[in-house]
Length: 449
Image (cartoon, rainbow, N blue to C red):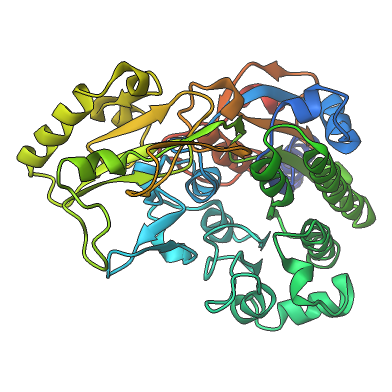
């Protein structure tokens, strides 16, 4: 009898020790904050109005840059952030994707994602998740979800669409009552920084009320300011300050919910930004050799699909080698003044970085050149502002990464990580099973048990 009692005590003691070890080293909550257009200089350079981001960097660890995907645009990038997969695997290759009529439109339905998401892995592990304004999250397996969506008749109206597609039904109305007050359309409009404020308040409420194990939030204002003004400008500084304040709302909520000692904060983004000077329209070259890239509702024989600072060449029929050869000859014969504006990214290189598997090749322009879809007007014209979409080898297109809180080593600084590594890192911190097709956990940041 004494022997049995001793064995029981030993087992209980071992279990208790394991529990204490996991609790001390690990994290029960991960908050993934994506700031659209987030750049490393926002936290590395103290002249930017981002005290909360800079404090998180000082208290935790960070990367000097995050290598983006190609094209480095918002929806494919956020899908990589939540899956650990490159676009070729997760299926979201551009911001807009072709529908049944071959018309490109914004993709919002999470069922279009072909790889496992972090949200799915969290649910499979029996944990709760929440999300605010995350791209392509409509209908996702998220317990408390206010997706990024807008009215089909008015893109400025996000309020009605978010209410309609919220999970559970009535969640947005709950936010109006307890988090943001009665909202007008412009309170959730990309044109105003109040959208970031309201989204962060809703995230803060979810943290305090429901304490999800995993929360994802997309902060959008910086991207719009950089598109208008480029990498610097008064509007960009205001947007960075607004994003930083949104982060502070979330950090305050963690403290108010008594979760600080069990929460890991990850702040990252989807891409950096490049200042632009001129816009290039390569579909004009196709028109010069008799290929019309704009043929109404029909899919053209061939076209350049623009994606910000890049363009992908598509054939209607991948076996149409005659058209491909015709286009190749045209590109080879271009004057040097145009050839120096971009390089051709061949299929084998696209395969290595998991880019659109249906493109024959891509154009990766130099800094300052922006590509558009038009096949009429000027071939090359002046343009101001900023853009993304560029090939990952341009330093300015890198996004940032800060990690701080429970289970995280302090003071680790890495030169670079991949965008595809962030989802498996979050999963590792939570201790859940998650197989990222292309990424791997960045173990240098995580405390070992």
